[in-house]
Length: 243
Image (cartoon, rainbow, N blue to C red; front, side, top):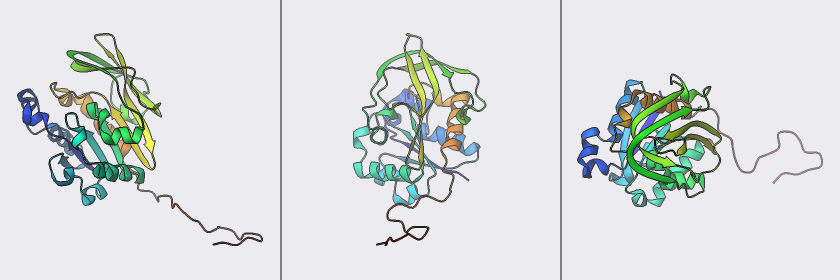
């Protein structure tokens, strides 16, 4: 069974009645609920818990980490970011949602500013699938529509995605690379754009299906990991010596 940890800074829910009304158990709560229904082994973690809820024990027992943050990126401790990054390099999957593009962990893994254009005007977003054979798109129609979302627009300052899954069009005319995959070390990373906190995006069944598919895709294969460092020769060396 895939073990998933849903991380959320959990600040908007404490400060904004619109957000708490939409997500009474937090954004992490609704994501964990639909993942549990799908049969995953799910736990949650939030910013204000000791070690942000991401202790060594939690990270070692996490196959896929989902990350949602916005107000408090700077409050995430650098040492926790480094632990998460190391786990990704070792093979843990990472799914970064919406404003998590500015999180320390995503910027560290991308090596760029991850900046973009934005506008909060409750406009329509249409997400087009541009890689219909990818497992993240399983069971999804060729496009998804959200009646209200925050606009993110190009240029999105990220490395060239290894796979581009979704492109968004917004009512105001902008477009955006909204579903991007990467590998970092032995781990898989998926960035998925929708999810502004004042809109009911995570109640949308198609958005839920994308995240469910992404968890399955990002889960480690649990195969034997490469051994790094000095290596003895597999065959005898002619006239050579080993140290």
